[in-house]
Length: 283
Image (cartoon, rainbow, N blue to C red):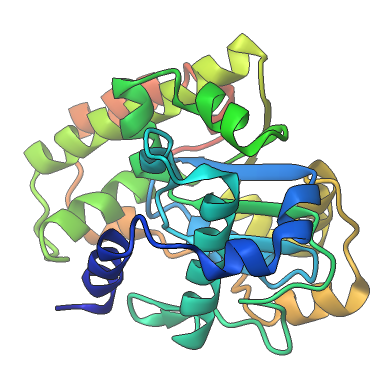
């Protein structure tokens, strides 16, 4: 059993047991003013962004706890926050490692906090899937946590994002088929449209940015992100975070064959969303 499945199994087995951290940090959890969730697509850089936020002394961001699936359970606010904190600690104790990468920020606050001002979870793709089945989940989550929800949406060049997702489904083989790319593109744009609908509704604050821009200007983008979440951005925190940022994103679209008609179809669909402005296959 891999560590992710093992954690899910452990979480399920202890579902109705008291949450130690929820009680231990009752005051801090009761007074936290902002709750954040990630929406969008997997393989878009969200693990890096969430890890950098979790390293902030005033934030706890759990790694893929999948909180929207807990809205219909009797977990309660303190229980939910306790699980978020526990998952943050778990991820930090495993060197913040995901796939083959370590997202540990040197001297960062991953798995712990000083004065808690932001708490949340990173599970972008599956959150969109759940919202497609039940569009009321975000509103009910906000009722549960009793503080405003602020949404983070990270986008990446759709050709790279779709390619990486398709290769993941094909066991990272270089021959992800055009059919597989087309299927993944449909999922990709459903998620993009989901976030667009939330933005258009105007009921919740959404901070949207392109991952490539973040890699090129990480200090500026981190400051914007912290400001959106209502926290400052200490210089030592920024310095530590910058050690993890590689300024060049891998252009996985060049690793597989893209048919011309599929390129044109994806380009046309991307042109419908302002979040994807400027992206081209031949950038």
